[in-house]
Image (cartoon, rainbow, N blue to C red):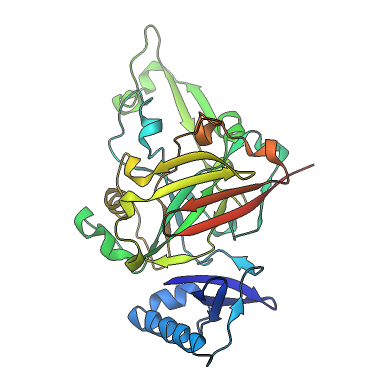
Amino acid sequence: MKLGMIRVDGKPTVIARVEGDQAVALDFPWMEDLISAGNAGLDAANDAINKALAGALPAIDVSNADWMPPNPKASKILGCAVNNNNLNQYAVRPMKAPMFFTKGRSALTGHNKNIELLKDHGPSIPEPEPVVVFGKEAKNVPPEKALDYVFGYTLTNDVTASGVKFGEDSIALKQRPEVIKPHHLAWRPKFEGEDTYLLFIYHSKSKAADTFAAMGPWLTTKDEIADPNKLMMRGYIDGEVYAEDSTANYFFNFERVISEATKWFTMEVGDCLHTGTASKGTEKFPRGNIGTYLQEYHGKLTDVEIEGLGRLSNRINLEQ
């Protein structure tokens, strides 16, 4: 089942896909309300679909809908950083566990909406990713139980402003030798001579700016995805594929990412977890997503396509 949210005459409306570009409105104020209803919510959605097919409920044409992100009231949005073997082959040391960053609701935007780039964002790259949407509260979940907490999956373009990340959101501090502790240097090799520099990277402006979490259009219930660890992912820029990859190429699989997230954070109903980017490039774009700079494509479309989940399209709007 595919679920979504659109605005109808300005009113947020939860919908279920009937077939093609036809959908039916559901009697829930927000997607999170449907998810919280559990099986009763899914049964209500299925009933509405059947009634729309029989002509007992009006169908909505969503081909030109005013799309919202599928679940715009998520209490938190987590991203799993660098979770791709194509990137990790360059790691100085292998990661011990999934790494996370956070985004707020204000970063969300919907299908066919603009991704707004400020001049100050500098070089910015797209990141095509599937997103886990939680169906119930999850805390300290073991990997073998992780998928039991999933309501469904959507897709995102996890925009990263590399210019800000390395120009304004990072700082190297030269500390006094007596300040340095073993854990400060555990992640990197020891350099010759005085080695008291510590690198700090923050991801607020570079990862969580407005429109940097485009999602949708559909939220696909988990019963439609047999194995999330074998999904093809593609990223498009102006109609051309710049990245073609698979979730099988993740450094940490879905179960491990979900489990690790619930170790540190209580994941609530409707919360979102980006699981890892598509990175492997193509002949024309050999560096994949990390060599695809959005600001060079002002006014063009950037798309995310993930097997079984659909296609998300957004237009790039660079501040003039």
